[in-house]
Amino acid sequence: MKSQIYAAQSIAASGIAIMDWRIALELRPDLWSSAQDCHINFISDQKLDGTHRLTATLEGHGEVRVYARSLDLLEKRIEWIAGRRVIELKPAELEQAPAPKPSVLHRQAADQEAARIADLRKIAAQEPPAHDCSLRREILAARAELNKSHA
Image (cartoon, rainbow, N blue to C red; front, top):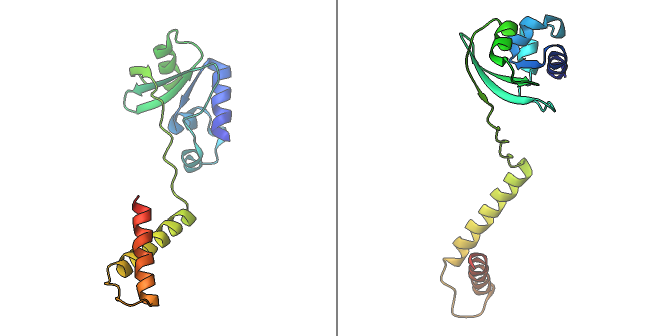
């Protein structure tokens, strides 16, 4: 991926990688065919071994992810490379992985189970006939299954 190439080459060249698509496009326009290509395909949160993960707030630009081999004069180094003054520099917070979305099959199975339980409740709500017949057995079986699922 081009953003990984950008990050690796930035670290190799200057010891820091400013992981923002707008800055990356300014610094390395040769890597992307257009600004849209850079914006869509840019991955700012990467694992770069041996680096410090930081968040810098740049004047007139906002927050950007920064990876740095060394913290020495880092604010000045970011300013030299990005051309923007650093307002704040802090350790990056670990991003929470998004909760996995249930698959279509899981949702369908859950919907089918909910419909089955609703049908069982409808049947169990009926008053069973006094004599032995299939309706009585069905009502009693529905009640037993609902009691079993609640236990």
